Length: 389
Image 1 (spheres, rainbow, N blue to C red):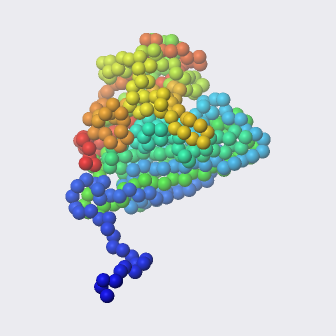
Image 2: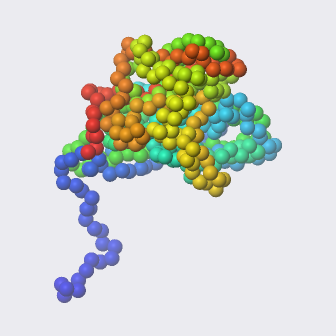
Image 3: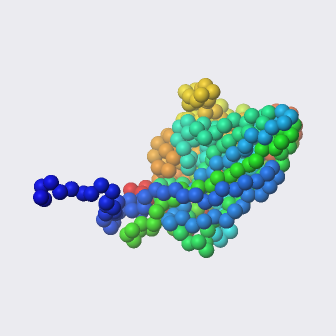
């Protein structure tokens, strides 16, 4: 009888996720994730397996690096810059390129795999913006050399904006990582070295089932690590020039290191940021730290997370200073929710300088200021407003 009939258990159901045509790209392109590869290497090796296609538009790559337990003689974590930046210093050089060879993320592992996700605003929010707080992380055990860390290599900088094509198997991004020698992380390494495993997954938007393209196809945000010039003697009164730029800047990550490569807080009491000779910022260093706490929560007294090991603060890292241009909608960075209205417009002739009168005390001189700049290079006019709305 019709009144008592029903659907047979396990019968395939019709696909019900299709949306009517019209509206923004993200309405028709559900989130997806798929495996790219798993690679096993040794210290000093090279990770660069070819990527595989994903049926849509890549938002970024999730990466999990595991150092399996070694053994033997107890290791000792290096007291040098490599130990200070561990475990992210395992990646000596990270290069993320699109299919046409354009550098999207390039620099040392600490800056690209740690500082960019934490400060750049393209991954987590609040306490989870700090890669140290990932539930997948396991701190280094010096005796065995075992550890695990997770990170994210981002393309998307606003919702649906900045993604790159992953569906064409002939035009895929390239990820290459030069692994550091064991002495970078351990002054006394374990006698039996651990095996290193890198697992890479792609976060992507599925290809829509209606005609809909992501906003600004071909637009990318690039994070490139570059040294500034000249170097900085202890207590010097001088300007230091950032490399020439060209695009819309979403933020500046400044990384100050002494002559040994260690990160140091040798910033001036009152740093000055000049754009084409005009002082854009003239502020106390402590006030810039307060700005950072307001915009991101980093360094705020209450910005902590509870773990099995206790309460871990989301603190500003020694030697790093971040100046945000992603607060168009609020005093607070809202991750991928930003209109881009206050991105700093530059061109190849724009000169950005950091001044100190004087710079701070630096024991091992001279120091080098390095810049990791979030730079949006649009394929046409920059899409303003909320492209996902």
